[in-house]
Length: 458
Image 1 (cartoon, one colour):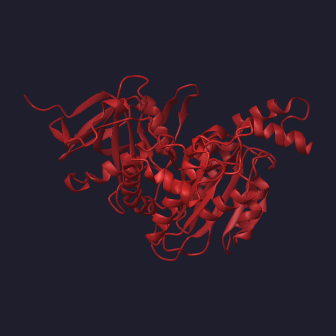
Image 2 (cartoon, rainbow, N blue to C red; image 1 turned 90 degrees about the horizontal axis):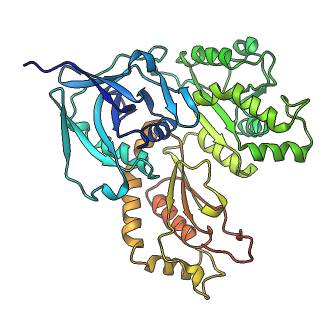
Image 3 (cartoon, helix red, strand yellow; image 1 turned 60 degrees about the horizontal axis):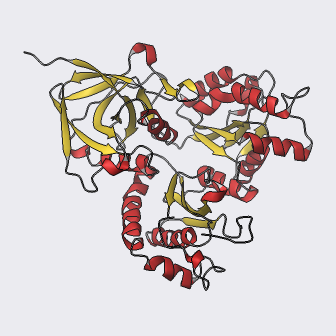
């Protein structure tokens, strides 16, 4: 009996690049409904991956390997629980490089043996992963990297509208700034201007060609105040711009939590552009629906809910600096889980399992920058293996982010109060990464904040 050439499976597939010239490779995420397939896929897409297929995947035997495609009815869309069906950056197909079974953390072996699974006569590497772990995207990239040598290279056709970067003169930097009113649009343009960009706000799309003539880097502000604003014409124009190899175009979307936006409009007594005769909340909701396609398409989303002006300058400077730097910049910050996750974080690690100096009277009023607190945290038997595993994961991972074009990475270390354990670990991690020759910045977001009861906990 001959081996069938196609197979329909219940799974989600994403594709990421594993080297500089071989094209994207597919990761098949398997598990029952609710296992976290779409959740993990969305996190990977937010970090630059592309969707191949959601929920159902068509596997096709091609040469010595397998190619994954989406059924025609669901191509390019992913179902987001609580949100609905949404279009996301996608590829028509990708070669299958890795199968990932999504399971609970307790069901995963710490050091599993290498495993493969045969599908349509092709052996494919396979592993088990907890999809809800903060490090799940990083683990996927490391696991995929380990399969490169054994994989047959299958080059999928280039997706429509995507062209390879042309070597030669460096393309002109163009940043299109959009997002929600009150999220920091004007501040972002000012920061980009300070970085060396020519900044123009509220430019009608009909005048964009004139602005993009000869000249240096440019930042263009486009939002609902722009004349005849509509998301689709802007997206169509972006397609044309990004197809031009002479331009490196980035769509920057500034987001913010609704309650923060309401407070900003109330404090400044400015009316929301879409709430002239109704509640501010209604205007924000209407605008969020209007700009949703832009957020889905954005190359970079910056949530300004908890960012100070200095933080926003740091984040945008890291992503859009025009100075030539030899390596990706890394920002390490401590934080308190009580006050929420840093929304700009790329990687988040929880150190609440370490012994808490708050319960030592001699250490309670100090913070993790003090050598006595640092020594206490480091004396916990769990600290040394944790820190070794953390650095063993990060140090080979950072060059991979660089090769994907990422210029700025934020690593967040959290504990209960953001004062002792997270601060000590942040100090050590920043110093360790800096010893490798990287440009590393550090901050302690919540070190001076209390818990509202007169005490501070870490």
